[in-house]
Amino acid sequence: MDVKTTFLNGELEEEVYMKQPEGFPSSDGEQLVCKLKKSIYGLKQASRQWYLKFHNIISSFGFVENVMDQCIYLKVSGSKVCFLVLYVDDILLATNDKGLLHEVKQFLSKNFDMKDMGETSYVIGIKIHRDRFKGILGLSQETYINKVLERFRIKNCSPSVSLIVKGDRFNQNHCPKNDLEREHMKNIPYASAIGSLMYAQVYTRPDITFVVGMLGRYQSNLGIDHWKATKKVMRYLQGTKDYKLMYRRTSNLKVVGYSDSDFAGYVDSSKSTSGYIFILADGAISWRSVKQTMTATSTMEAEFISCFEATSHGVWLKSFISGLRVMDSIYRPLSIYCDNSAAVFMAKNNKSGSRSKHIDIKYLAIRERVKEKKVVIEHISTELMIADPLTKGMPPLKFKDHVMNMGLSSLM
Image (cartoon, rainbow, N blue to C red; front, top):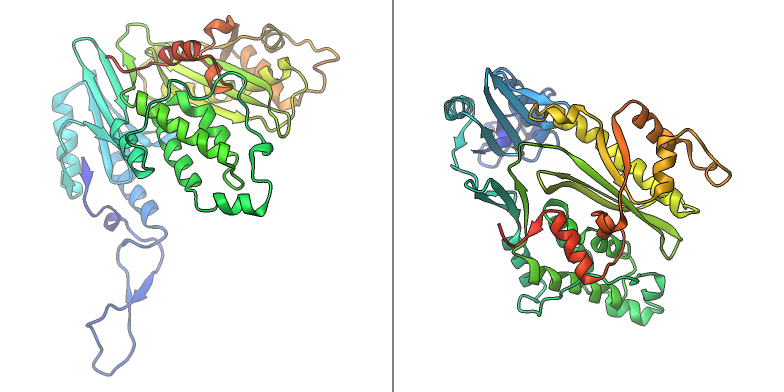
């Protein structure tokens, strides 16, 4: 559903004045102003006042806000459940009862000027695919990717089978060496290209997360090799634009996390890269690839830091999903897999040696989370480490296998 003239619904808490529009001169020529009775477009508080108004009204109908994400609401009435997702002026409803859905729509239309868009096919540029017989739901951004390729004039480019191969690394040696080279790169729309790729990466394409993050580090001093690599990412998307991030019906809903790192992979500072991904219903629901803030001195330390970041997000996920009240398994310890035996041992045991004593105390919070049974850290073979593509370049075939295990495929 769509809310019309959204920001005009907000109530003002402060006295706000504006210049009087043209066409309303006073009889004595006095310069007058208008005192606003309600929020209007252009006010810095307009979006917040709309949210507060919506929250108060929807709460009065029995919806409860998710503590971890204030744009998600849940209404439970016996065995009937309705989820409401608010994104500025767009409202997404999901329920197991058509009668409750009708009641919610009627209530919203009574309080706001609404437009019923029917069954959802697109949400913020993401296409929703359904196969109810097979129990599969897919999310794709093919239309968006086509627009990106057209904007950067490579719509008819030859597809690339890979993003970045094993051993490929970018560093400051690829940056311009003199003013002439910098001038040559000045008009290249690099930042716009990276931003466009990030939009796809954040929502449905975990497979490009690592390379987009790595290329994003050079936006202020890009070289021609960085631009070539960016276009290679677009060529990869050309060949995989029909990929869907898919989730499959299952009687055993369980969130599983994978954590990995690339020791000293950032050549310019010798810092490592962390990567983690969480899977639910055979599809990725959350992922990240990021340069570590401190310099790890060993592979174990880099893996341990990555585990800390994964467990931090995992604890948040547990709280978020528990608020949805759809998964009993979320109350059990969250499994996070790591392919480094030393890091797994350190997470489970209160022992330290000369090589690990210096590790920042905040990272030792992993042990506390394990002890409190919020998470459990388990070892897994490197061959099965789904988070590998989030930290480094890989051979094409192995990369494709990991991508499929993330839930990405062109077939439903």
